[in-house]
Length: 342
Ligand code: AHG
Ligand code: MN
Ligand code: MN
Image 1 (cartoon, rainbow, N blue to C red):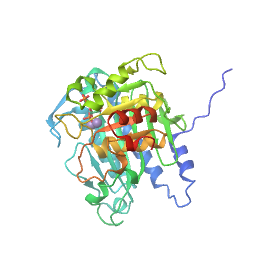
Image 2: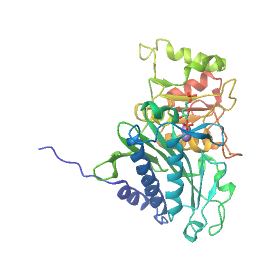
Image 3: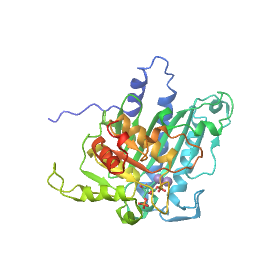
Image 4: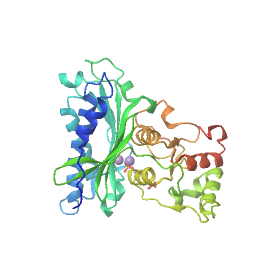
């Protein structure tokens, strides 16, 4: 008879993992559980999309002038209210809100963590039933505990992250998160409503064969990047064939594949978007932190994403992220020799 594997829930796992830090208070585990709870609520709506009136446009635009979908709004409100009720979160910043939100009840004021999130990533894919996700980043606040959070709490560089990750609403629903110790993936077991450890100690393969970019924008890229894309399309000496191109247009989905199978994901600057499209604090920092913890690499083209000191809540950055060999090669083409091998 097939031996059944013992299920380890995300809760059990995080409690065991944080016990390795003698000063740990369990607050980080509590916060991860609350983010997981909000994402289970979002998952419930995502799985009903098409049956209930949740598909399509909400009719408003967000702070960045982008059209909001109904699920964007639902996911945002769910995360904000679950984290407000959490005893471990002092405040949040969201891609969908103009400014950060401060939680002012006593528990929240006395919490040491803040959370930044992209509540629903890949909005344009909702209506066509392709994978979408939620991305989150957890920092220890720099403002005084007991006082309301301040803007500075949300403008910390990625190298100060305590934990970061994403939930992917794909063929199954998975939560993948990183601490400095490791990256682990948990698949939602729908019958018990728990995320269970399914992908322990994830490592991004050092060598990849897949490149991921919106190649339709090539005419707006600079020469170095265009030369790298040509290199990807040529017959590769090692492989005896060109690299494969895969691009879903949901960062979470493209990054999940890159993490598991190896490869490179790029959202570069171009002539119409000098800083690229993706947002530093809600998308690039959490993914860069996770990729580094998994042994991969990320760059904005001139250095490590995680070293950028944010000056604005909604700032954008170009990103090149994934397997070390592919990121280094891309940087080589983009004349960033000094960074290669780091
Ligand atoms: P969001 O839905 O949170 O606004 O993010 C969409 C992002 C990201 O998920 C994806 O990688 C990128 O937009 C795709 O952009 P293009 O359509 O310009 O390639
Ligand atoms: Mn996004
Ligand atoms: Mn979004």
